[in-house]
Length: 329
Image (tube, rainbow, N blue to C red; front, top):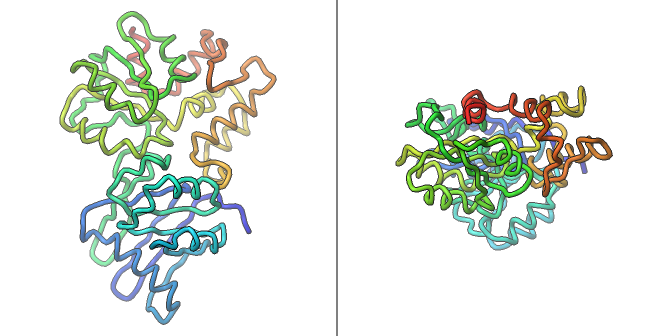
């Protein structure tokens, strides 16, 4: 069995339709309204699996593309090669179960899941949520949300000058860093978990807040937060891959090795070992800094990262609007 890492380019076509797209991670979500081509895509792959070339469908990919469905889903997964790309159509309720999450966690396959639900047991990235765009007979996948380090929201002017509070998704090193560099004009508190972010925003009493969360695993919560944001003017989002990713990006550690990893991380992150990219970046940072003065622990921030040189290097990785907010406190 080959290691499952790296991107996969997929083309599914018949005489009438063609789908072409690239997946980058172990978890990809396709959503959208009815009649947008999601079920048709799954059906074409299913027909190819059943009848091969006689189906009139062509599937081109460097890994096997298969459809898993129904009550025997777990048995079907066990019988697959671990370098497969598993497609699951909406209506298969097992995708929201804890057991499915446990199986995926140790799987060597990639999963493409069609669903309109938020799958809270799976740590998928905000950048890997797609809709299907149709242009005549050609279909492609387009990201539903913008790139992960954009400030979200069509109603926002990207001006964070009125923000009075930062809410971090975690209570570990990332929160400790942002709390330490906030001055008296901007407070910082932890939501103590992704599932608490929206509630923390609602408790702000209408004050403008900046939410900082790990984009690599915030996908399940992005829908409800985006809906809230479209109705209110007081929430801004900064969703880097993770706090550890910011440190790696800062050039404080790793040199050429880290630059190479960050230029195409998909080629280094094996799905069977890392449930999300956030886990990989944490492990990478811990490995590289072990035994050095920059040794990193997720649960408790090494105070060295708050020294002026180190803190400034991390701040330089932030979008200009976020950096300006922190520099003006």
